[in-house]
Image 1: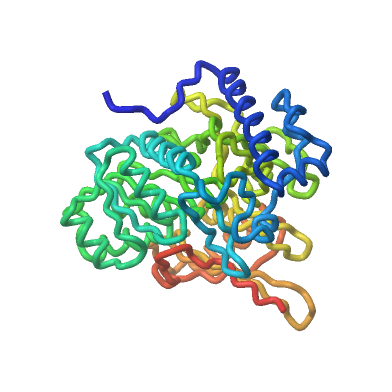
Image 2: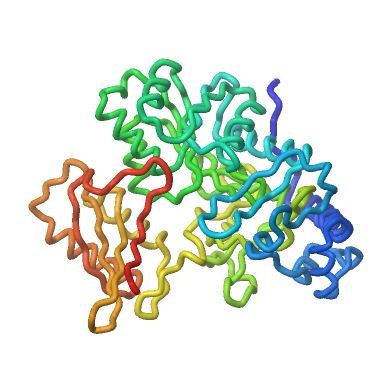
Length: 429
């Protein structure tokens, strides 16, 4: 019988007991091992002995990305440097990168978590997993590959880009699973279609990471490739890397690995819990991370908890897809707009395709204006462009309460990307 990487909790009380033990261990470990955390806890008037229930989490101070950058090059380190066997870094584009340290046990935990993702997606040792994400100091490639090897499936580490090799390996090696960003998946789907390879490949599933994808984009990818299923895999360098959860085949939400970290959903302004089902910022506290434990780390990612249990029967709790980041929020004429809202609105319009751009500018009258450039669905008759444009403008006005202009593009007119797509162009001075 194959090993299962899924935790065997009898009920939620059993899970909560496990979380409390992990929280007690983490706070004692961070307090004793990290000068940074010790100062933080003392300033908050908290000691490890004060942690007696999960409710005591609220007494603990927050940790931020700024703390990681200021602690460069070994922020939050809670073990001797000789125990660090690897580092990874975030993909930040300005200033010093956020570097995270790993012990051998940290890597073991991460790869088991990732193998659990593959297991939840229904992969077996018979699968061939083509990995089309970045390698190097980033966590993406190493996470997808070593998690795959931990499961026992065949890893095909192509890396990002290189479309000719990607297509060749899909045909020659008969890859059954592709791991990539949503933008890369769309690019690959269109290339496979363009090159007439659909009947020559054996691709069954795609696991999407690193980038939010709209319903329209997912439907397009699935149809072009004839897939059985697609899955979303969240993750961040600070929290091991990708592989911190997965949406199962029921697609009712993303199961997150609550035996490895506690998830809070807080209002990013008040830092108080949001009401059940409301969108807020993900704040995470690790339960067994040795080298760089996280205590109430503000991820800036926005989502909501899903309180209803999944119909798949797995008791691990769920959160919704990532809506965006609190620091990616656009303010237009006093209205807060998240890119995820634009995704959902365009996906609800039958005539629209999956690609769009958001252009913001400030005109001579001193007011801000927004133009949405969006592709129509492939094969759609373009004679009704004005009606489609009007529908987009009305839907945006109705759902977000802000006016916009719309520019409707032919299918394939907007650029495709091998990594994350660039969708927001803020040209306001």
